[in-house]
Image 1: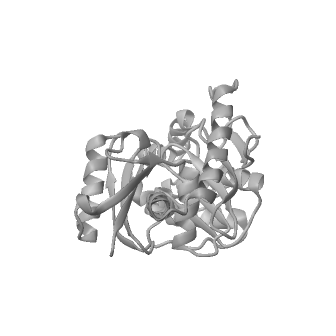
Image 2: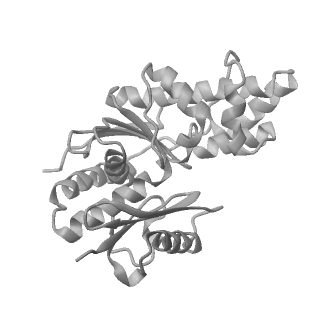
Length: 309
């Protein structure tokens, strides 16, 4: 008998939902843009994924949520960290992947994946908006172009300008200053993308380079972001057909495993990740009041996955 499960990734700017069948195949998905975390948006994403799959809500046997707003997903049976879900989804979308670079709306993560598609170790930047989707929104606003146009604009420019501030709070002012000096919009865009790639390389350095490498999240659709990260890594990034749904697909696969009774190995890894994140949240962490965005500052944390004894 065929049966279905659902994975939902409620991020800071988009809601993603997937429907997965008993074999682990992706049979329906959706991505809904939103201005802020929204129950309405996640419901629309879930309904659209059900429609795409041609199934009803009553056909769904298990729902797992992930993402920034995972506690707001209606009907979710449980939740997993974005780290575990992005690794699992990316490994399914690109079998054999060893490194996942996820640049989301509010944070960025680099995840080393083992041969089973599980998280080996990861590093993340969730204390500062530099290099995230929000950062590119700020850039687009300063350049007076739509955010969907920023990547192509950057590819048309030269990347030799000095971009000293990687803090989203001050980046807009710096971009405006460069434009006031007569610099071309394309050159400014290219130079900012290069600086973001260098920042991302700082995260990669903490977990180690590995191939194949993929990017997930909305920024993966930005051709200049991919180009400059590839240049920084000095190896290619493999393209995913649907990079935004990696987390939701991973959540769906975990829901499938749970319903089929094979969740144990992944659950152990996710508990380890949660423990490390809780430990970090309980510590004293300096708050960014205008960091220079250089690799190695307080916004970067490496988290090895070791289970507490």
